[in-house]
Length: 65
Image (tube, rainbow, N blue to C red):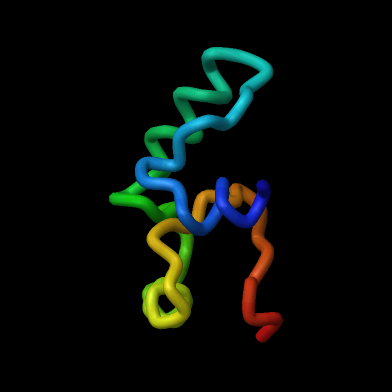
C-alpha cells in the first residue's frame, strides 16, 4: 500500500493528516506529483523506473545514494 501511495499516486491524494495546517503545508509543497524538495535527478530516476509520483514527506532517498 505504501508503495502505491508514494509512487503511483497522482496528486499525492489519500494521506491522513493530524490537522488542517499540516495538510495545507503538505499540499503547497507538491509540484505536479512530486514534492518540491525532491531533486530533479531523483525525479528522473524515479520516472525511469515507472513511478508517476513521489509523495513521501521525509528525506528518504529511494536509491540510497
